[in-house]
Image (tube, rainbow, N blue to C red; front, side, top):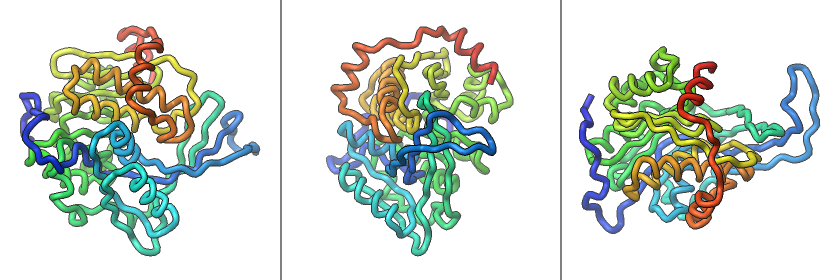
Length: 331
């Protein structure tokens, strides 16, 4: 493990044609189904509409950052079908430099997303094993001509390869992890900014106290920042010295799909602006909250000016760090 005791210098010399952010990871087409209530086992429930939208963890993060003015690249694997062409059109429309690897006669990743009356989503995923991104399918130059790399860890070996090249080139490496994938320890050792789902720290460390778990991950793997997103609880982060809790914004949730993806986008955008950690986390919370007020993983990606106005005019939840920790201990 390479220690990272000093903050990364994010404003190092780069060429005018370089990329701000490259993302390596998941994409999917989402079929969104709104339900009046979540169905009980063995029941039948009618629904009125369904919507087909592009999504996926890293893909959505990259598109949001591109929308806010960063120069971005996406690297991922798709089938050779209508869904893959939908993704290609959307990357082209938004201006993302997409390096797509297509597999003949394979279906692109798909998610069925059920959204209940409170806006909470339940996701059913389907992904063909032929679409697992392999390290030898990556090109070093796709990764290193950038300021930051974002991975989700699903295709762990490829993510490790990309993160290794990124570390060698001095890029900031950010990860969005929600599963304990085989080999994830080797990946986390190469991550600078690890932002995970709420139950990931306890599953990784066995420590139920969230602050202690984040501190242990920080110490064990040498990350600069470890953090967990907590839905309405906001985000809790450990920077090596102190715990930072940023409350979520109080909004009427329409659909929580993609909230974590857009949170990561907000964090990455703010990180590359050189903002303080407090402002990074608050901007990320705002971007995620706005996305929850629209349908789909990318439905609430909006202009920077709208996010800044939202931050000035919208209240946060008022839970203290102690209240958040008590809530998390019950999970």
